Length: 126
Image 1 (cartoon, one colour):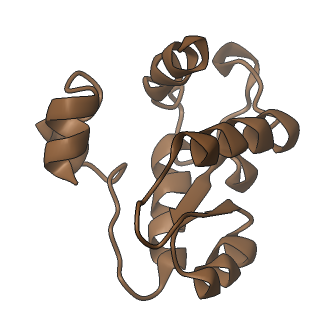
Image 2 (spheres, one colour):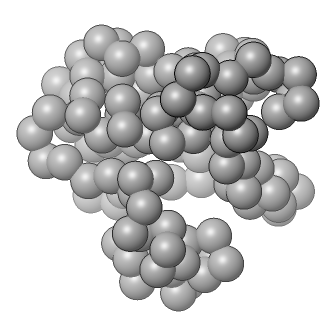
């Protein structure tokens, strides 16, 4: 995964710092742990997080945390149509204000890291 994301997709986003931060989560059992850590790391609303997974029972973890679930093919991983479905779901479910307009939680007085947005915009233009 680190090879594909960090070397083939976008090394400026998926850097060693990304993989050593709480933005990168990988749990094999309880996906709620990963989802909640990502929500806290980016200081975002749960409906602004997507869980791509090939196991249908992991939908319950997404539902439990309020995240969006996208079922991926067992034999291929995330496909372009999966990514497009996620973009569509985010545009209809995620109502994040611009960073300067947000009221931040007590544990975060700084705007959240939104460096991933430029990647989403680039992917949208492809």
